[in-house]
Image (cartoon, rainbow, N blue to C red; front, side, top):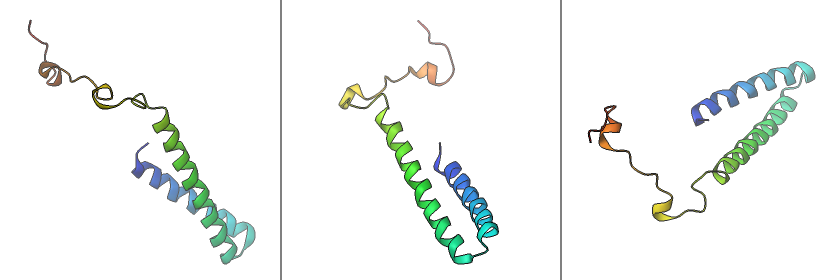
Length: 84
């Protein structure tokens, strides 16, 4: 997931959370505090998700040439068949 997509959803979720919290409590300060707590929890979850993605990546534990993918032939990069 790209950061821009995450940020858009993050802000949207916080706005909805803040509106619902304000309607339920009718308190600006309670809404502000609860929304800040919600933001921290969402950030912690996003950080944990990124750690899991990195931990499960296929290049984990490989170093140097092992971690690099094999380069594609120049003909394949341009969408042409390779001549043999």
